[in-house]
Length: 416
Image (cartoon, rainbow, N blue to C red):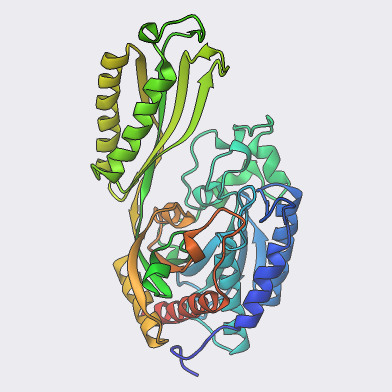
């Protein structure tokens, strides 16, 4: 059997997806398997058993990353790493992240069953806390894996006042040893992440395999509009300095920056807080949470500057005061051209059509890219839905993505 015809056990992969998906099933729909919770611990235990069944040696690093290892014939060769995450958002779906981990394990099982030894070591990683549970730092595990955690990260607290250091203990991590979780540049020959698209491009094109060209970056922008609170019944309309009315103009402007002006690929005003938040009081203060996403840091900065310019006009027109502050940002990264070509060839040799596209969502891969070449494979998401109970990818698409991942591993092992 050659690498172009070797396929995973699709029925077994689907069984694994269903079984893991049952852990944390939410009565309100979908699943809630937040990092560091009992359901997360149960999910990790299930994945550990799968890794062991695949012949992998399993460990939990200091950052809580669950890692299954398989030795290669060349002990000095850098590793081939397959990864994603198994934690979810509240009422999320069964496929986001978890599919990539389970497919990585299935690749390892297939290699073991076929008696195929790789020259490179193989590692399958379930990164800890990708989603940022309860207000914690997202992509926690991959930041530690790449050695780029910010200073004092382990002392940060979640929404309940619990430190990350304490949370790590619940999954077998150790905040005092975080430096030991970092892999060094040169230790990884290639990192592959297989993922559901979380958008509707592949489905609209009727193409089963996406070859990811880049993972777009994002910048969070906090907007505060200060008006004058007043009695809603006694203050004439012409005398009002209504912060919410002014904020509404800014919300429309955020959309226009992407939809009409096309300064960035995506722009969203996703949160709003109104003070004092009463029906009979004119809003005196409004806070907006804005996000810009693009494959270019220049464009993200241009969008932020554009919003500042619009805010100045709103101030002049409305009499309010607007503060615009750029906050946390994730830089965009490109996927390794060699790995893109390799993935496309793997798809073609299986007879699967492929399409090159950017990723609009963030992934652990963009953090791992700081120390290793990355390649990402997408499969279609029904209706483009993700982070929701109705998230779904057809079984044959899941199997096709895993087939391509397996072939990509074999190809990369042979040429490097």
